[in-house]
Image (cartoon, rainbow, N blue to C red; front, side, top):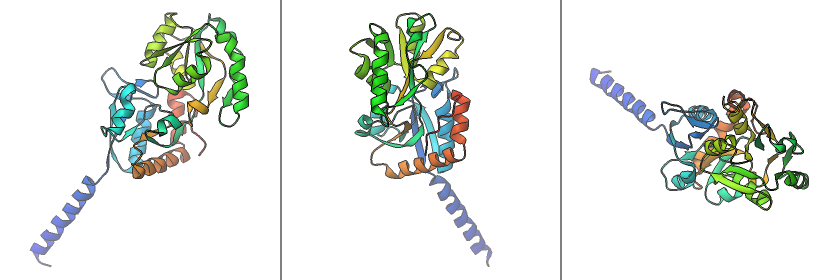
Length: 281
């Protein structure tokens, strides 16, 4: 083989390798960056939390070059549909209402909600604390549980983050007996609860557990009442994707299934939430 042919083959191989590297799929993932421990911003501005670590793991499995960016919650779905990023990982529950606008991957976590109240509150005696009710598989029992706790919540003010499944749930089942106050972020309703301006916060239990670990909340608050899943609360938390992006959805599903099967989701959820939130696959 001549030297010129050898050089030519080497150049061709280099170009093929460069092409393969540049062909790596680029995926931009939006997160809220203000929903600890799911996702949050460190003092230096870097993003951290359960979903940040999980996103990096899923991207590695998909062999994708991913960028994770922060986006305000209220504009996160419009930003996806406008094409400003490719996916959402922001503690977003899979609901029929949202599926009218975007699509979702399979769920990567499933957790119940709960009420956070001060230890000195009369709500600590609310019935059915610690019990779980799935509104999809046993609606009758879930509705009975709601009726049992309504008298305790009558006249109370309940804080929720706006544009969430918890806000929808509170308006649907408690607006007739309590004031529902919506906030832009979970931190805002936590501060009002601490200051005594509201009586309770309704959110997913892992987020409430994280709030109770903050120094200013430790030993002063507790989670009460039954935990609900399904119905307006959705089918778990998944990756939000544009409806026509079927290929990306399939890749996320494959990566999520693998992360669940090898225990990665279990490991990360136990690290960040203290419990295994892996959904049944």
